Image (cartoon, rainbow, N blue to C red; front, side, top):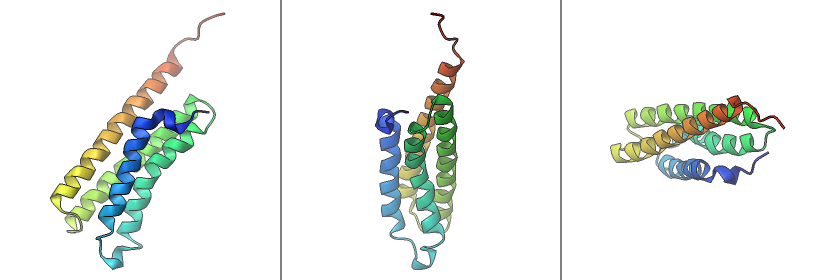
Length: 127
């Protein structure tokens, strides 16, 4: 078990994305409250939540698997942001900022997953 704050950089970036997404979705139409607003918020929240959950699991294999789920949530978020823009709920500068954040989070998750998997493949030293 790891403390999710050990992965502070990616977790913090994902947490900040959640806060920004909540702020951006406050301007969405009321009729989207249970639709796109809810879906986008849940997808965003899923990213840091899965990072925290993965750290609470037993072993790096489970952590890597749950980080891959966080990666899927990041991809879902990326699409939902594009959809919100296409529906004219997000202006271009807000889309660009949030998309850049999601892209950075995905890059960080990919690097972390790669490192965990590489470390798991290394032969253990014989004692």
